Length: 194
Image 1 (spheres, rainbow, N blue to C red):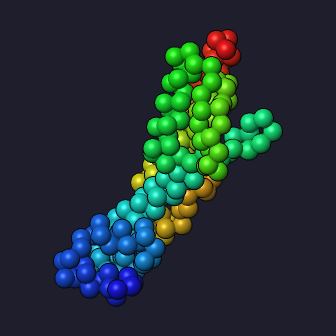
Image 2 (cartoon, rainbow, N blue to C red; image 1 turned 180 degrees about the horizontal axis):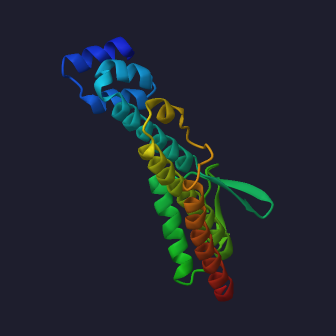
């Protein structure tokens, strides 16, 4: 059965799904936020739109992180997926360097397993952590902005990747500056050890 507004409405009316199921249908792209409001009812439209938007931006954040990073290494661009298991692998790879390893084999997304130097491993780790931190902090700031809005139309207009208004942009930039300082400190420490 193809999911559309009529099918989701029927499931909701027959109590086979709850409001969160309707919101999940929005996240999956089966119905629009406006259709979800019409299914759940306009009595709590603002909160329906808010919940759907938060789910939408969370999904966009996750997709951005999982899509990964490109790291320039020795004149080529190696791509690394950042699904949770890949994040764990990169963290473990970096742990080898922290413990004194000078090189270690790892596989970029193209399937080629290469021996990366400690410096290259640190580059991969820092690029991954920078993307994860940037996207997560942006997501949290955008979510705070959505939670502060009091109009369903304003909430519906919010898009992942948009420029944050003040004071959210300034707060985000402060947090990202702290993260960048720490990444720079890690690289400096590793350069002294290698």
